Length: 337
Image (cartoon, rainbow, N blue to C red):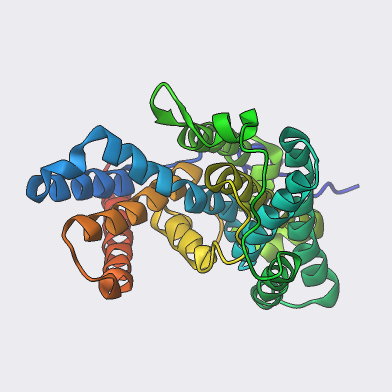
């Protein structure tokens, strides 16, 4: 009986003669985007020294947390040639549902798993519709983005939800600072490390990369593509729930209008960080650094007193420069012995 080739946790497969090829280490090179981030920060600091103040840098990092968490989750579907445009609506709905639960007497820390379960379920719904209706995830998540945000607006009656137990440790600890560092920033780094291990060192991550590299071959080798899609989009939904929970702790209210445009910014951050739309590879640290780059650009505009109308232009320019620099560095390393 002929056995189908299998893929191990590093994405390797036996050759046609049955011998296993030497394992090729998964190359994760975020050097390009890190260099862009450092140069950008130092460049702004040369002309506006106040930008390098530790409090300002921490605040800028804090502002990148929401998009950073969304971008980290976005890497999973993007790496297998899927996309999740519903994360902004998921983010808002998670905030609103969490605020309603806490306002109605549910202890904040008990409400957290409910929020995360809801957000994960919303991501799974995207996958189920995509799989069984045979509709591209781009179209499905574009529709559910409007659907989720519409539910959030209706649930909150179009206004912010206040009257929350603000003296709870949920708001004090998660929305505050630890040794001067925003708790949300620490959480993003820790979750980034965990997700990096999941993406690069587990069978699940290897399967995502295998599907993204060659979907037809993945089906031929017997990979459960539908299940992997479900898990990838559920992961994206989970991270939207985490981002919504962190935002709820910081703002101490549920705002159904918050997060508009976050989905495109998260995709941009992931692409800046080295996750191509063509699939097959991705970088969680790179996505987080990409979010930091975008946050630095936004903060720099304020320091240079540039009208807000130029924000989109500047952000787009930085995306092009960052992606071009990263691509050039990868080509250089590929041609260097």
